[in-house]
Length: 121
Image (cartoon, rainbow, N blue to C red):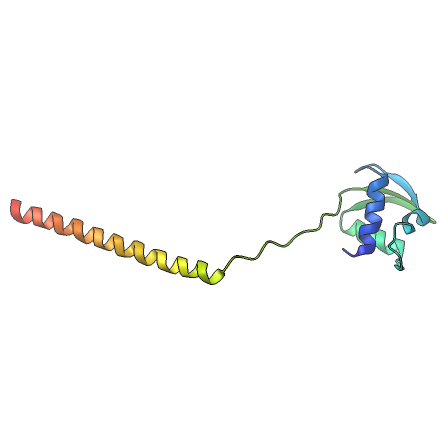
């Protein structure tokens, strides 16, 4: 979302509670625009409405009946994984040693069973 939309949405959220319609004038919304920003309020409101941030009940001339629906929360990307090569190396080593230990234990048990059966039978 661009900075103009965020500024207008902050203005709407500061003057109205979620789900309650309030009448705003175009000049009132233009006051929220950052310095040196020439933005069309109608396009900004359409973008906010399409994004599900506001609902425009009606507009007449330079007056708008707007209800804020949700606040804008900037999504932060997840932190990068620490040393992916090391994690892959750990994964590769673990199954080898587990399989080796399992094979050795299985061989020992089978040898023990055959030894017992040899002497008993």
